[in-house]
Image 1 (cartoon, rainbow, N blue to C red):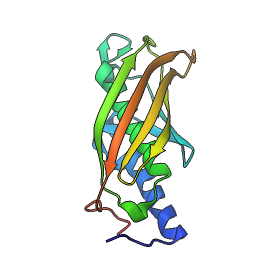
Image 2 (cartoon, rainbow, N blue to C red):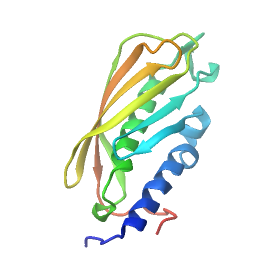
Image 3 (cartoon, one colour):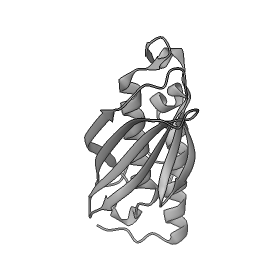
Image 4 (cartoon, rainbow, N blue to C red):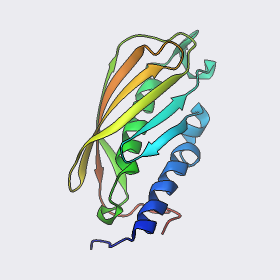
Amino acid sequence: MALALSDEEQYRRREWFRHHWETGVAFNAHAGMTVRRWDPDGVEMLLPYADHLSAHEGVFHGGVISALIDTSGCGAVMAGHNFDKGSRLTTISLSVQYLTVAPGEDVVAHARCTRRGSSIHHAEVVVRSETSDKEVARGLVTVQIAGERPGAAFR
């Protein structure tokens, strides 16, 4: 059954997800990910460098960069999503290209939804060094949104 949410209800759900991305997802909070921008045109997320997120001294573990790409790509989909079509999001595909390292530098993921379907959505993500602005990684994220997210406070 399709919902018919008001503009205010749509806005409340987008804001709930924005907050959830920073504080409701334990890994994101532990890693220190923060949302810099969250709007229908895209999402930017900051990931500060920390030794406990490293593979070697001064270098992010690739899995952490991959998680940032997944998180920000999913965020870009949710930031402009029509919640009449559901709110339970699942990543169904993730591809990552690692381009270089940013030793000891914070990174920012710039994500945008490139295609919205009835339930399948796609996002592109570029991760850049906060200090040098060099491109560290790129990713493509494909998600499915179907049904309602259990336990969400907006219900």
